[in-house]
Amino acid sequence: MDYLKINSVKSLNGKIQISGAKNASLPLIAMTILAKNSVNIKNLPHVADINTLIKLLSNLGADCKFLDDRVTIDTKPLHETKATYDIVKTMRASILVLGPILARFGHCEVSLPGGCAIGQRPIDLHLKALEQMGAKIEIKSGYIQATTPNGLKGCDINFDKITVTGTANIVMAAVLADGVTSISNAAREPEVVQLCEVLNANGAKIEGIGTAVLTIYGTGGKLIDIKEFSIIPDRIEAGTYLCAGAITRSEVTLTHVEPKHLGAVISKLEEMGSKFSITEDTITIHPSQNIKPVKITTQEYPAFPTDMQAQFLALATQADGVSIIEEKLFENRFMHVSELQRMGADISLNGHTATVNGKAKLCGTDVMATDLRASSALVLAALIADGETNIHRIYHLDRGYDSLEKKLEGVGANIKRLSE
Ligand code: UD1
Image (cartoon, rainbow, N blue to C red; front, top):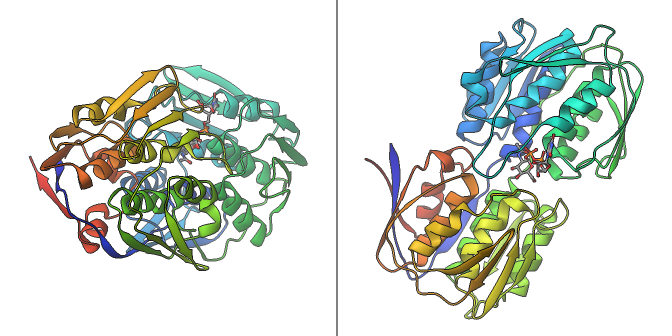
């Protein structure tokens, strides 16, 4: 198994190119199930989750050719409709194939994803919405078994909670359904917006993109022609490297980035004392001597993202004063706290709220990655911890960060990937 060995450095300096967004790529790869043609997708990140979804589509019979940051997916030969446990257990987002497969073939089986390190993460809202559209759903032997005896029909769906992959799943199902589907309390994340925009650019009709109410006019089962498109930049990867600049008090420039997607992250970093120069597709963070404490509550987009909570918690350990970080989306998303404490951080946890007493002197040691974003928080802490930090179980990190050690090494970090 690989691990990362990181020694602290005085500061970082240079440019980091941001990769395509993992969370935009996943629904857009699943979307190829709605296409009648072979689809080219550009600017995919090199991360394990993308390989997993492409493997899932290949197992179902699709013809996938993945080279560098491009994939060509032809779902014409797709004939299997069962997403088996061996794949789904490695990536919960496999559930994204349920909506499009069901809409196209009238039946689909997906293994129940089960629990996850950051919380229960149920998929009840996906299933309830599909049932409203006319699907018959049974849970048998750990599998969701869905059929559409009378096809999928457009209807009014109101999500009790905002769900990102739930919205994507229902949008894709609704594109092939009969009639008009309206989704209220829809997710407004840029990744959902890109899915809707790509669909609209290719013959689907979706209104309200980027708002909480989406109206989707179904094609009545007609597959669509999808032209080549490019994945939007990864706002969470970008936010993580901005935190790397802030925690090491360095000047770092991100390129190929979309500053508009990082409003809440940049504004929290500004509150903490960081200064920025921003162009259309670059962000430079300038060194600041003192890091100020902060109050953060994670919420759905456009508010502060839960996927940046762990990284800001690591940064808050270096603030002069007390920071309060409240996690509103996932019940168990503080696994990184005990590892940061082992490095010397002073953090107390009370339910969904972490109180971080800064500034703590962090010391390198052996730590364990527990989930994707928790892993990057440990990397940030290691960049400034005294001595050497070894981060184990980095397969979590590899699920969502493209070439992290190469990108950080490129700006002067002392970081190596080794095998144990
Ligand atoms: C997506 C992102 C993930 C991010 C999360 C929240 C992808 C591949 N993953 O995950 O990185 O952390 O959004 O921004 O895009 N919920 C239910 N029932 C459901 C669905 C969700 O109760 O059927 C709850 C969840 O437990 C959670 C909240 O709704 O508390 C939001 O979850 P959701 O937006 O669905 O997260 P994901 O789409 O899985």
